[in-house]
Amino acid sequence: MTLVAPQIRIRRPRLATLLTGAGVVLVPWMVVLAKTLPSTVEVSNWPLAWIGLDAALAAGLAGTGVLLRRGDPRAQAAAAATGALLVMDAWFDITTSPPGPQLATAVALAVCAELPLAVACGAVARRRA
Image 1 (spheres, rainbow, N blue to C red):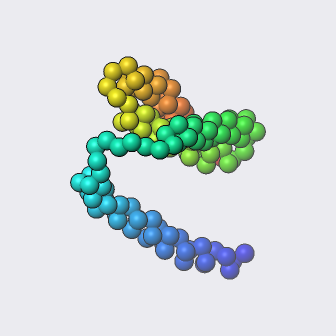
Image 2: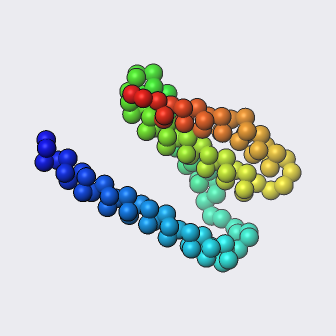
């Protein structure tokens, strides 16, 4: 057992450095995207993309609920991932909706469903096992 702990200590700083570096590298990439991406685009498989996201949300919400009911500590990780997906879903719903009723619906869903569920998931994720 004592042999594993030093290996974990050695790997953790490397992983932390890798993840931090990846985040920093994304900043100039976002500038490139902001300057080069078109403001509108026709997208293939649009329904499949949204159905896939909603399927992931359904699995995450249901899975988190089942794990939480069982008192399984994995509920925290499931809740964290599901909360992130809910925020992402709200963001893309709002930013891809055209002005008018579709945008109003997207904002209403974000405010009344997606973001409150994300907060609830965040509360579960922060619980101590």
